[in-house]
Image 1 (cartoon, one colour):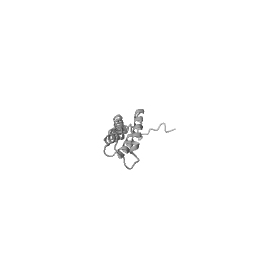
Image 2 (tube, rainbow, N blue to C red):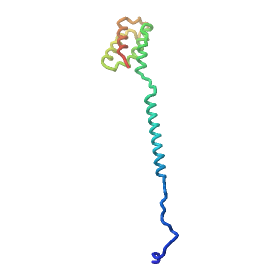
Image 3 (tube, one colour):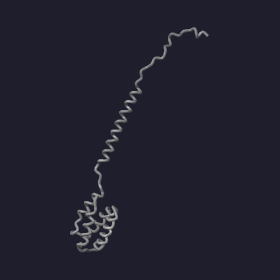
Image 4 (cartoon, rainbow, N blue to C red):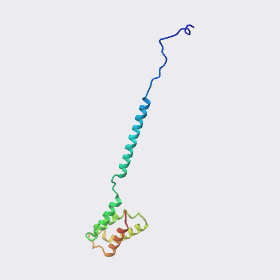
Length: 133
């Protein structure tokens, strides 16, 4: 039991060391999170505001630009194709589209066709007027 009486002078007690690594880690983490949030915000803003091609708008422009007097056969096919975009908007559109298709039947699937009659032109114009984006 001599160790109790013996004093050791060369072993010193633990000394507290100032360690700032946790604060450095916290600061770097906050900076990274802020940068990622900013990049995510800019990406969302870019995705929201980029120029998207609106199919309905383009089809409406084509539908309204069809020349009814020049080539009735081509116009009938184009009216059928681009008018179908708007037929499912509501019951009135569907009914008008079906009515227009019935009138256009005699201008399709033939080698030569005569110009549109006034009744067909009025139905086409009415359908083009009710279509909107």
